[in-house]
Image (cartoon, rainbow over the protein chains, first blue to last red):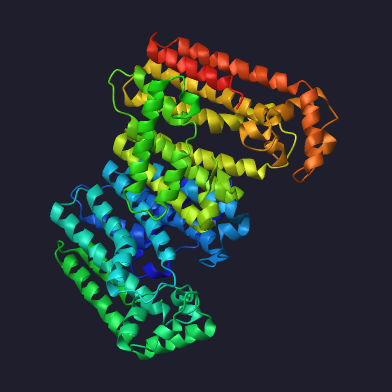
Length: 320
Length: 320
């Protein structure tokens, strides 16, 4: 049971079932690195995407077991994590050693590819062609976005508009698709599908902004990663964009064509924190959170709506 | 027009259409590395998989334009090539520089992932769910096989049976699927589907055996790769297996736990060539070729059958 779902025991159980399904799928083919992938599944992320999918499934007119599609969505996420670790040469993920560090980048690339194929197979077995297609389209968009992001490294400062477009194509698109897919599969009404799709979009925007704010705040322990990882990596997120605008001339001289060193990073973080940009960014997130909540209010009253409401509220006020 | 198809101008034209479709798909999303992938498409492999798919489509009872599905199959192939080049750290492919060498392994991994997604999307748009599923399953099997093969590096000598199982899961499965998918999509009769599936399997076995024989024979120029690349990489293919059996005690001392050096490789190649193993391996290929031809004879007479017959014959007697 992941910590995040302790407050919703029923969801915690359903996610355990998704996790079991994932482990069965991964273990079924005699795939050589199945153990390593299963360890990653056991290490338990928040499993937000499958959780949203399952929650949205409760608004449908024709209930359907969404365990397989939820497993497919999370396997896809894990495939991208394995490839991310190859790309970033990361040694650990969720506290366990990465496939990349244990088996080398060669096997990690193939393990990710294999998972992609298992995911698409599971998705085409368990979902409508429309959702299988949406899933494929989304992964394409994410890969494309990753490359764009990398090409834009150290191209600062960026506009707020550019930043919002980027997170819309990434986190917001994924949250939105997860909720939409659950609703479509269970034949929810068009108005419920539309409300869930929009709620997912707004929640994803708020979630990513908060993630980027927390990156400037957290200590190593809470986030399990160093403070200001984004700026260290040459990535320009909302707090930095707003700080440049709030204190013209103070940050620009610190931003060079290469990733900033430790001292420069600290100086940037200090100005961002003083500038009021953190609060300004939080208030942007709050606008999106409110929008998500308004969409959720359009849904029929009941336990399903309460559950979704509580989850999004907890997610957007988290400090980790 | 690729050299291989010069004798069948009509196929050459159809493959040009597939190539155009691939380039359109790759160029349509504003993907940052579209140019690099399009260059790889232009560099023109033999495009055997889409060609088989198109040929099989002529045996159906309900003709259908298979350009999109053929493009999906070849895009999948290109995605695996891009990842292979990351894995092998190759600098050139088909005479052009690899995505890996030009943009680094990070972007090459993402470019492969992006192509996977485009391929699955195209496949689910243009084919029956059954074929989309088969395609996904097959890619999974190929990744799994690649890792197995890598884990077995320098584990010599191997059994003929193990070798045959390995190439069955790799080349034969892919040839078989390409022919089957073309037949299924155009609603061919069950007996035609079965004959094409078996013909593809047998042709794939023969093709891979011949490929492994040629690896011991060709000079660098003809194959565009060094002689005995397999044994240099620690891979044990049919000629080596048969040579160990034909000349007990002569090769085993040369096979160590690491990849052989140049001198050892030359010594191994010399024994393999003297041992009669090359002819023995060729005769195994001939058995599969005959089996493929027998299956093709079961198909209805006509231009479609003649075309398939000629292609497989040329493929299996090629010297490059």
